[in-house]
Image (cartoon, rainbow, N blue to C red; front, top):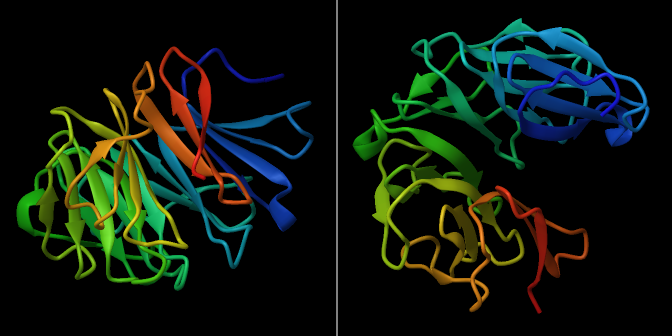
Length: 248
């Protein structure tokens, strides 16, 4: 990336008008480009571990950092702290409710999951088993707004009441962190999890899991996405590149 610092990249997101801008979260900086990487502008901040863009207002973006949740109203050009109510801790993961983007969830390093119902102006902590958990990833069920999944260092937990209480879904998962989660919007009981032991699939809303595909991916899976046709799963790994996994 031209103009990018020599730093680890933790998150990427498309924002700006018609998704014309690319935002990058790195160790110590948030980067922004709208020229396909030809030139960059960088804001020095705490490490940005996660990024989220409001699908209804693409100039509005959020960044989970080492010190706070940040918000931008201009596509990432300027950022301000937007974390009232969050205990000072790493915000490792962010997820927006696609049906109501004013609702945002933040997964933290040791304080569980927080929820904002007013576009990040203020936050309230969740509860249950995750009150003191390290939450590395979050995924909201787009068909049932009150349902979300959290990937932790102990496995996957699911809440059906916007994060107030949580149920574990460990069956079939290896021990260790869950780095990425993805809910299939066309089949909300279908959930994918990226772990240190590869990719896993749940067909019952996160209660039980099995390796996917049958031949396991040879590396830790740390990011997941679906292509536009929703027929191929894109899995980013540590040390083994990107895998395209057919779903049909």
